[in-house]
Image (cartoon, rainbow, N blue to C red; front, side, top):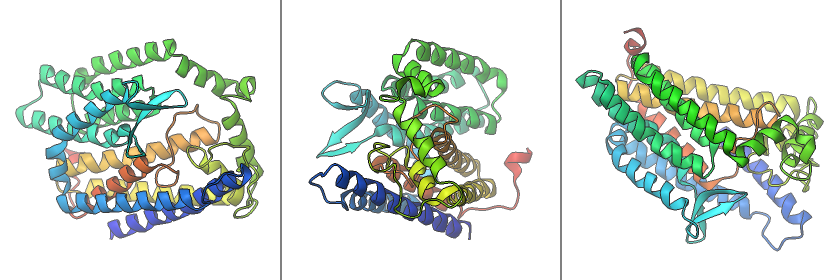
Length: 368
Protein backbone atom coordinates (compact mmCIF):
# COMPACT_ATOMS: atom_id res chain seq x y z
CA UNK A 1 0.00 0.00 0.00
CA UNK A 2 2.89 2.38 0.75
CA UNK A 3 4.25 2.11 -2.77
CA UNK A 4 0.79 2.85 -4.22
CA UNK A 5 0.55 6.10 -2.24
CA UNK A 6 4.16 6.91 -3.13
CA UNK A 7 3.41 6.45 -6.83
CA UNK A 8 0.24 8.56 -6.62
CA UNK A 9 1.97 11.43 -4.79
CA UNK A 10 4.87 11.36 -7.25
CA UNK A 11 2.44 11.50 -10.18
CA UNK A 12 0.67 14.49 -8.64
CA UNK A 13 3.93 16.44 -8.31
CA UNK A 14 5.10 15.44 -11.79
CA UNK A 15 1.76 16.37 -13.41
CA UNK A 16 1.69 19.76 -11.67
CA UNK A 17 5.27 20.30 -12.83
CA UNK A 18 4.31 19.58 -16.44
CA UNK A 19 1.58 22.23 -16.28
CA UNK A 20 3.98 24.82 -14.87
CA UNK A 21 6.76 23.96 -17.32
CA UNK A 22 4.40 24.44 -20.26
CA UNK A 23 3.08 27.67 -18.75
CA UNK A 24 6.53 29.22 -18.20
CA UNK A 25 8.33 28.01 -21.35
CA UNK A 26 5.49 28.86 -23.73
CA UNK A 27 5.34 32.38 -22.28
CA UNK A 28 9.10 32.78 -22.82
CA UNK A 29 8.82 31.61 -26.44
CA UNK A 30 5.91 33.94 -27.20
CA UNK A 31 7.48 36.90 -25.40
CA UNK A 32 10.77 36.62 -27.30
CA UNK A 33 9.06 35.65 -30.56
CA UNK A 34 11.22 32.55 -30.81
CA UNK A 35 10.78 30.16 -33.71
CA UNK A 36 10.13 27.21 -31.43
CA UNK A 37 7.16 25.00 -30.74
CA UNK A 38 5.46 26.17 -27.54
CA UNK A 39 5.05 22.49 -26.58
CA UNK A 40 8.73 21.63 -27.06
CA UNK A 41 9.78 21.79 -23.40
CA UNK A 42 6.62 19.95 -22.33
CA UNK A 43 7.21 17.12 -24.82
CA UNK A 44 10.86 16.86 -23.80
CA UNK A 45 9.93 16.66 -20.10
CA UNK A 46 7.36 13.94 -20.83
CA UNK A 47 9.98 11.99 -22.82
CA UNK A 48 12.50 12.23 -19.99
CA UNK A 49 9.78 11.19 -17.58
CA UNK A 50 9.07 8.15 -19.74
CA UNK A 51 12.76 7.22 -19.80
CA UNK A 52 12.91 7.68 -16.03
CA UNK A 53 9.85 5.45 -15.60
CA UNK A 54 11.48 2.74 -17.73
CA UNK A 55 14.68 3.04 -15.70
CA UNK A 56 12.66 2.87 -12.46
CA UNK A 57 10.92 -0.30 -13.68
CA UNK A 58 14.25 -1.93 -14.58
CA UNK A 59 15.74 -1.05 -11.19
CA UNK A 60 12.59 -2.30 -9.47
CA UNK A 61 12.90 -5.63 -11.26
CA UNK A 62 16.64 -5.78 -10.56
CA UNK A 63 16.22 -5.16 -6.83
CA UNK A 64 18.05 -2.80 -4.51
CA UNK A 65 20.45 -5.55 -3.33
CA UNK A 66 21.89 -5.94 -6.84
CA UNK A 67 22.08 -2.16 -7.28
CA UNK A 68 24.19 -1.90 -4.12
CA UNK A 69 26.32 -4.89 -5.21
CA UNK A 70 26.94 -3.21 -8.59
CA UNK A 71 27.62 0.18 -6.98
CA UNK A 72 31.46 -0.14 -7.09
CA UNK A 73 31.31 -0.35 -10.89
CA UNK A 74 28.78 2.49 -11.10
CA UNK A 75 30.97 4.53 -8.75
CA UNK A 76 34.02 4.11 -11.01
CA UNK A 77 32.09 4.87 -14.19
CA UNK A 78 30.38 8.02 -12.94
CA UNK A 79 33.53 9.28 -11.22
CA UNK A 80 35.22 8.98 -14.62
CA UNK A 81 32.36 11.02 -16.13
CA UNK A 82 32.84 13.68 -13.45
CA UNK A 83 36.50 13.92 -14.46
CA UNK A 84 35.85 14.35 -18.18
CA UNK A 85 33.13 16.93 -17.45
CA UNK A 86 35.91 19.20 -16.17
CA UNK A 87 37.93 18.90 -19.41
CA UNK A 88 37.47 22.00 -21.62
CA UNK A 89 35.98 21.08 -24.96
CA UNK A 90 34.26 18.01 -23.55
CA UNK A 91 32.33 19.34 -20.57
CA UNK A 92 29.67 21.91 -21.40
CA UNK A 93 29.84 25.19 -19.48
CA UNK A 94 26.62 27.02 -18.62
CA UNK A 95 26.40 30.12 -16.39
CA UNK A 96 29.97 29.68 -15.15
CA UNK A 97 29.57 26.00 -14.18
CA UNK A 98 30.91 23.00 -16.06
CA UNK A 99 28.43 20.27 -15.12
CA UNK A 100 27.13 18.84 -18.37
CA UNK A 101 28.19 16.37 -21.04
CA UNK A 102 26.55 16.72 -24.43
CA UNK A 103 25.77 13.45 -26.22
CA UNK A 104 23.91 13.47 -29.55
CA UNK A 105 22.61 16.96 -28.78
CA UNK A 106 21.27 15.92 -25.36
CA UNK A 107 22.84 17.44 -22.23
CA UNK A 108 23.59 14.96 -19.46
CA UNK A 109 24.56 15.85 -15.87
CA UNK A 110 26.50 12.99 -14.18
CA UNK A 111 26.30 14.59 -10.72
CA UNK A 112 22.53 14.00 -10.64
CA UNK A 113 23.11 10.24 -10.64
CA UNK A 114 26.21 10.38 -8.43
CA UNK A 115 23.97 11.76 -5.64
CA UNK A 116 22.47 8.29 -5.34
CA UNK A 117 25.46 6.21 -6.45
CA UNK A 118 27.95 7.50 -3.84
CA UNK A 119 25.64 6.67 -0.89
CA UNK A 120 24.91 3.24 -2.44
CA UNK A 121 28.64 2.56 -2.69
CA UNK A 122 29.17 3.80 0.86
CA UNK A 123 26.44 1.40 2.05
CA UNK A 124 28.17 -1.42 0.17
CA UNK A 125 31.48 -0.69 1.87
CA UNK A 126 30.17 0.13 5.34
CA UNK A 127 28.09 -3.06 5.61
CA UNK A 128 31.17 -5.11 4.66
CA UNK A 129 33.11 -3.24 7.35
CA UNK A 130 30.37 -3.91 9.90
CA UNK A 131 30.57 -7.64 9.21
CA UNK A 132 34.35 -7.59 9.78
CA UNK A 133 34.28 -5.25 12.77
CA UNK A 134 35.02 -1.53 12.65
CA UNK A 135 38.58 -0.56 11.83
CA UNK A 136 39.60 3.09 11.54
CA UNK A 137 42.14 2.48 8.78
CA UNK A 138 39.61 0.81 6.49
CA UNK A 139 36.90 3.29 7.41
CA UNK A 140 39.21 6.16 6.45
CA UNK A 141 39.74 4.54 3.03
CA UNK A 142 35.97 4.39 2.54
CA UNK A 143 35.59 8.06 3.48
CA UNK A 144 38.36 9.11 1.09
CA UNK A 145 36.70 7.19 -1.74
CA UNK A 146 33.40 8.86 -0.91
CA UNK A 147 34.89 12.35 -0.99
CA UNK A 148 36.65 11.97 -4.36
CA UNK A 149 33.44 12.56 -6.39
CA UNK A 150 32.37 15.25 -3.91
CA UNK A 151 35.63 17.10 -4.57
CA UNK A 152 35.13 16.76 -8.35
CA UNK A 153 31.61 18.18 -8.02
CA UNK A 154 33.01 21.12 -6.05
CA UNK A 155 35.36 21.85 -8.95
CA UNK A 156 32.49 22.18 -11.44
CA UNK A 157 31.42 24.14 -9.25
CA UNK A 158 28.19 22.60 -7.93
CA UNK A 159 28.28 23.32 -4.22
CA UNK A 160 24.66 22.40 -3.51
CA UNK A 161 25.02 18.86 -4.86
CA UNK A 162 28.38 18.38 -3.13
CA UNK A 163 26.86 19.46 0.20
CA UNK A 164 23.87 17.14 -0.22
CA UNK A 165 26.08 14.11 -0.95
CA UNK A 166 28.34 14.97 1.99
CA UNK A 167 25.35 15.24 4.34
CA UNK A 168 24.14 11.83 3.12
CA UNK A 169 27.45 10.26 4.12
CA UNK A 170 27.23 11.86 7.56
CA UNK A 171 23.67 10.57 7.95
CA UNK A 172 24.76 7.07 6.93
CA UNK A 173 27.58 7.12 9.49
CA UNK A 174 24.97 7.90 12.14
CA UNK A 175 22.50 5.25 10.94
CA UNK A 176 25.23 2.60 10.66
CA UNK A 177 26.29 3.42 14.22
CA UNK A 178 29.86 4.15 13.18
CA UNK A 179 31.73 5.30 16.31
CA UNK A 180 31.84 9.09 16.33
CA UNK A 181 35.59 9.09 17.01
CA UNK A 182 36.04 7.48 13.57
CA UNK A 183 34.22 10.07 11.50
CA UNK A 184 34.71 13.19 13.66
CA UNK A 185 38.19 13.91 12.24
CA UNK A 186 37.22 13.35 8.57
CA UNK A 187 34.18 15.55 9.17
CA UNK A 188 36.28 18.39 10.61
CA UNK A 189 38.76 18.09 7.73
CA UNK A 190 35.95 18.09 5.14
CA UNK A 191 34.27 21.14 6.68
CA UNK A 192 37.61 22.97 6.83
CA UNK A 193 38.44 22.19 3.21
CA UNK A 194 34.93 23.23 2.17
CA UNK A 195 35.20 26.51 4.08
CA UNK A 196 38.61 27.31 2.57
CA UNK A 197 37.37 26.41 -0.90
CA UNK A 198 34.28 28.60 -0.47
CA UNK A 199 36.34 31.51 0.89
CA UNK A 200 38.69 31.48 -2.09
CA UNK A 201 36.03 30.74 -4.72
CA UNK A 202 34.63 33.83 -6.49
CA UNK A 203 31.63 31.71 -7.54
CA UNK A 204 30.66 30.98 -3.92
CA UNK A 205 31.48 34.43 -2.57
CA UNK A 206 29.39 36.10 -5.29
CA UNK A 207 26.42 33.88 -4.48
CA UNK A 208 26.70 34.65 -0.77
CA UNK A 209 27.03 38.37 -1.48
CA UNK A 210 23.93 38.29 -3.68
CA UNK A 211 22.07 36.32 -1.01
CA UNK A 212 22.87 38.89 1.68
CA UNK A 213 22.45 41.96 -0.54
CA UNK A 214 20.52 41.13 -3.75
CA UNK A 215 19.80 44.80 -4.33
CA UNK A 216 23.50 45.38 -5.11
CA UNK A 217 23.26 43.40 -8.35
CA UNK A 218 19.64 43.52 -9.49
CA UNK A 219 20.68 43.44 -13.14
CA UNK A 220 22.96 40.45 -12.60
CA UNK A 221 23.09 37.61 -10.09
CA UNK A 222 20.58 39.26 -7.78
CA UNK A 223 17.89 39.52 -10.44
CA UNK A 224 16.42 36.03 -10.12
CA UNK A 225 16.23 35.94 -6.29
CA UNK A 226 14.69 39.41 -6.24
CA UNK A 227 12.08 38.64 -8.90
CA UNK A 228 11.30 35.27 -7.31
CA UNK A 229 10.30 36.99 -4.07
CA UNK A 230 8.13 39.43 -6.01
CA UNK A 231 6.46 36.51 -7.82
CA UNK A 232 5.82 34.50 -4.66
CA UNK A 233 4.57 37.53 -2.73
CA UNK A 234 2.22 38.73 -5.47
CA UNK A 235 0.39 35.39 -5.37
CA UNK A 236 -1.02 36.31 -1.94
CA UNK A 237 -3.53 33.81 -0.51
CA UNK A 238 -5.24 32.32 -3.59
CA UNK A 239 -2.89 33.32 -6.40
CA UNK A 240 -3.47 35.15 -9.66
CA UNK A 241 -4.96 32.03 -11.24
CA UNK A 242 -3.62 29.28 -13.54
CA UNK A 243 -1.59 30.76 -16.39
CA UNK A 244 -1.98 34.33 -15.10
CA UNK A 245 1.60 34.87 -13.87
CA UNK A 246 3.23 38.14 -14.86
CA UNK A 247 6.76 37.23 -13.79
CA UNK A 248 7.05 34.44 -16.36
CA UNK A 249 6.96 37.07 -19.12
CA UNK A 250 10.76 37.50 -19.00
CA UNK A 251 10.79 39.21 -15.60
CA UNK A 252 11.99 35.97 -14.00
CA UNK A 253 14.30 34.37 -16.62
CA UNK A 254 14.56 30.57 -16.94
CA UNK A 255 11.89 30.19 -14.29
CA UNK A 256 11.14 26.63 -15.39
CA UNK A 257 14.33 25.43 -13.70
CA UNK A 258 15.33 26.25 -10.11
CA UNK A 259 12.71 28.99 -9.60
CA UNK A 260 9.61 27.29 -10.97
CA UNK A 261 8.04 27.22 -7.48
CA UNK A 262 7.99 31.03 -7.55
CA UNK A 263 5.74 31.04 -10.64
CA UNK A 264 3.60 28.32 -9.04
CA UNK A 265 3.24 30.48 -5.91
CA UNK A 266 2.27 33.48 -8.02
CA UNK A 267 -0.45 31.56 -9.86
CA UNK A 268 -1.79 29.41 -7.00
CA UNK A 269 -0.90 31.51 -3.97
CA UNK A 270 -0.17 30.52 -0.38
CA UNK A 271 -2.83 27.78 -0.48
CA UNK A 272 -1.22 26.26 -3.55
CA UNK A 273 2.26 26.24 -2.00
CA UNK A 274 0.89 24.68 1.20
CA UNK A 275 -0.75 21.95 -0.89
CA UNK A 276 2.52 21.29 -2.71
CA UNK A 277 4.48 21.10 0.54
CA UNK A 278 1.86 18.72 1.96
CA UNK A 279 2.32 16.30 -0.98
CA UNK A 280 6.11 16.47 -0.61
CA UNK A 281 5.72 15.76 3.12
CA UNK A 282 3.60 12.73 2.26
CA UNK A 283 6.34 11.43 -0.05
CA UNK A 284 8.94 11.95 2.69
CA UNK A 285 6.78 10.28 5.35
CA UNK A 286 6.06 7.28 3.12
CA UNK A 287 9.74 7.01 2.15
CA UNK A 288 10.99 6.96 5.73
CA UNK A 289 8.23 4.52 6.68
CA UNK A 290 9.33 2.19 3.88
CA UNK A 291 12.92 2.40 5.10
CA UNK A 292 12.02 1.63 8.72
CA UNK A 293 9.87 -1.34 7.73
CA UNK A 294 12.52 -2.97 5.56
CA UNK A 295 13.75 -6.33 6.76
CA UNK A 296 17.50 -5.82 6.24
CA UNK A 297 20.17 -3.21 6.80
CA UNK A 298 20.80 -2.54 3.10
CA UNK A 299 17.19 -1.60 2.45
CA UNK A 300 16.95 0.46 5.62
CA UNK A 301 20.09 2.45 4.80
CA UNK A 302 19.28 2.89 1.11
CA UNK A 303 15.62 3.78 1.66
CA UNK A 304 16.48 6.36 4.32
CA UNK A 305 19.18 7.86 2.08
CA UNK A 306 16.92 8.16 -0.96
CA UNK A 307 14.17 9.78 1.10
CA UNK A 308 16.62 12.15 2.76
CA UNK A 309 18.05 13.21 -0.62
CA UNK A 310 14.59 13.82 -2.05
CA UNK A 311 13.36 15.71 1.02
CA UNK A 312 16.47 17.81 1.54
CA UNK A 313 16.59 18.91 -2.10
CA UNK A 314 12.95 19.99 -1.81
CA UNK A 315 13.71 21.96 1.35
CA UNK A 316 16.75 23.62 -0.21
CA UNK A 317 14.95 24.61 -3.41
CA UNK A 318 11.93 26.10 -1.64
CA UNK A 319 14.28 27.85 0.78
CA UNK A 320 16.11 29.50 -2.15
CA UNK A 321 12.87 30.51 -3.88
CA UNK A 322 11.54 32.12 -0.69
CA UNK A 323 14.83 33.98 -0.13
CA UNK A 324 15.64 32.16 3.10
CA UNK A 325 18.70 30.41 1.63
CA UNK A 326 21.38 31.37 -0.90
CA UNK A 327 21.17 29.93 -4.39
CA UNK A 328 22.33 26.30 -4.44
CA UNK A 329 21.60 25.14 -8.00
CA UNK A 330 19.31 22.37 -6.74
CA UNK A 331 16.01 22.05 -8.58
CA UNK A 332 12.64 20.95 -7.22
CA UNK A 333 12.43 17.13 -7.50
CA UNK A 334 9.94 15.84 -10.10
CA UNK A 335 8.65 19.41 -10.61
CA UNK A 336 11.39 21.52 -12.22
CA UNK A 337 12.50 21.14 -15.81
CA UNK A 338 15.60 18.98 -16.10
CA UNK A 339 16.09 15.68 -17.88
CA UNK A 340 18.89 14.07 -15.87
CA UNK A 341 17.49 15.18 -12.53
CA UNK A 342 14.02 13.91 -13.44
CA UNK A 343 15.32 10.52 -14.56
CA UNK A 344 17.45 10.12 -11.43
CA UNK A 345 14.60 11.04 -9.09
CA UNK A 346 12.04 8.79 -10.80
CA UNK A 347 14.58 5.94 -10.71
CA UNK A 348 15.04 6.57 -6.98
CA UNK A 349 11.26 6.33 -6.48
CA UNK A 350 11.40 2.97 -8.29
CA UNK A 351 14.06 1.74 -5.87
CA UNK A 352 11.92 2.84 -2.92
CA UNK A 353 9.01 0.86 -4.35
CA UNK A 354 11.26 -2.21 -4.49
CA UNK A 355 12.40 -1.70 -0.90
CA UNK A 356 8.75 -1.48 0.19
CA UNK A 357 8.23 -5.11 -0.88
CA UNK A 358 10.41 -6.34 1.98
CA UNK A 359 8.91 -5.50 5.34
CA UNK A 360 9.21 -6.50 8.97
CA UNK A 361 7.29 -5.35 12.00
CA UNK A 362 10.48 -5.24 14.06
CA UNK A 363 12.33 -1.91 13.75
CA UNK A 364 15.41 -3.61 15.15
CA UNK A 365 17.96 -1.41 13.46
CA UNK A 366 16.66 1.59 15.37
CA UNK A 367 16.47 -0.21 18.68
CA UNK A 368 19.72 -2.22 18.68
